Amino acid sequence: MKILSPSEWRSRRDAHEARVQPWIEPRLARRSRGESHPVEDFLFEYYTYRPAQLHRWHPGLGIALQDGEEFLTHKNYRASPQGVTADPTTLPPRRRVGIHWLRKMLAATADRPPALGCFGLHEWAMVYRAETIRHESWPLRLSSSEIVAVVESLGPRCTHFDALRFFTPVARPLNKHQPTRATSADFEQPGCLHTNMDLYKWAMKSLPFASSELVADCFGLARKIRTLDMRASPYDFSAMSLDPVRIETPAGRAEYEDSQRDFARKAAPLRQRLIALCDGILATEPDAARRLACANAIL
Image 1: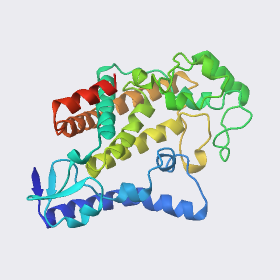
Image 2 (image 1 turned 90 degrees about the vertical axis):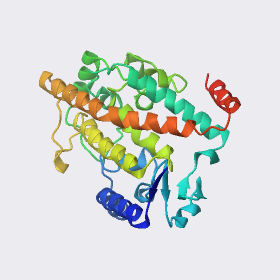
Image 3 (image 1 turned 135 degrees about the horizontal axis):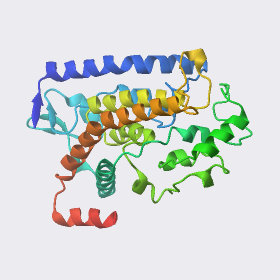
């Protein structure tokens, strides 16, 4: 257990709040004006975590806060002789089953080679032969027939279920892989942009045992990934100074794959930190019988 004095943990809290404020304030301002941003708002809307949740600081597992009684109003904290700490023994069995599943999925993902070369066609498949488009406030930079030609010539090969489910009905059969909700974890691989963006979701779901620094690291990477996601899409975002990655050309595909490889490299240590966090939580299970029950529940 690492013990933080009041001045130490308040300094860390203030640093976290200062770090995330530039991400939060524009979101709140746009929402008050009824405006939307396809890159900046995605992480708040798709993952549904409120700005206040990102702003709130948690020290993470294995940290005790002296004079930290204010944290006792939050779930899963307790007072100890060393200070107030997030206590994983307060987790109910169902939540522990979820941690077992998460650890297994993250480790399997880390062990798989990155599958590159999807070229972000998921966004193209979402408007393939569609009568309406998702981001209707933004124009497409190619005609409908050009989009059809790109999708059919390159062939979508998306491995992420939550992206596949937004494909148009006629685009789904064209995809090389057909993950379902039940089999989605079997397809997760470290080259997928959405898999790496999802590290933010898993960090958030692990609060208060994940440190807010880890949450912010995952959010910061997800923002950069989402930017590439939109730049490689068939939409024209030049009005917001987002130059397209023209995956319909060989040069654009090479640029996309280079960025995809770079994001896989940057996501790897974040994934390992989440795996280590799961191990730390599961190490507190009170007895072997409960560990066995949790393990059997996910088989």
